[in-house]
Image (cartoon, rainbow, N blue to C red; front, side):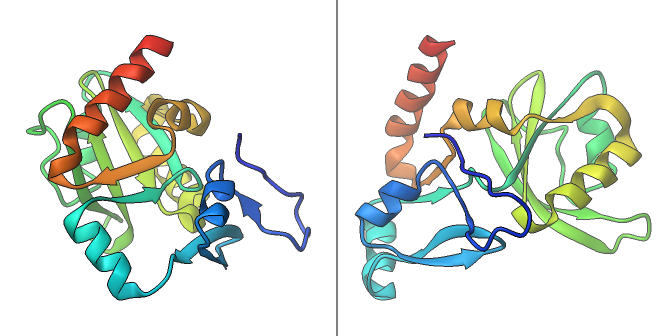
Length: 178
């Protein structure tokens, strides 16, 4: 189901498309920046072991998501972060920091190299500020198209080397849909 956005001033928090799954798995749900998000699914030790020995999934559908594309996009973004982006291979991701003109930290973000474009994932609470800053600094090469990204990766961040085959299968299925 699509993300549920509430009207400003509504006492209820927003819900991601994976909310029902979190609730069915008996997650302890808390308000996180205006979103109903899972805090944990039982003991932290059990969760640690599950992620360590199997895989962990993080619902990113509430976060700010945009595509940066155009000639020199990686070079332009690299001037605003503390990571080497031009050297990234397609299909890789990098955690980095978005910085101001003096090198101070504005926010942290993930950058995914998609080949002819880069996907940016920023914190939900700062997405409007971050995207405004990116738009101001690197122009019209950055557009916020969160719905496209959600359908591309289904709002999930799957992390564990042994699960790479599952991630590749998810990508294959997404390509078939498009």
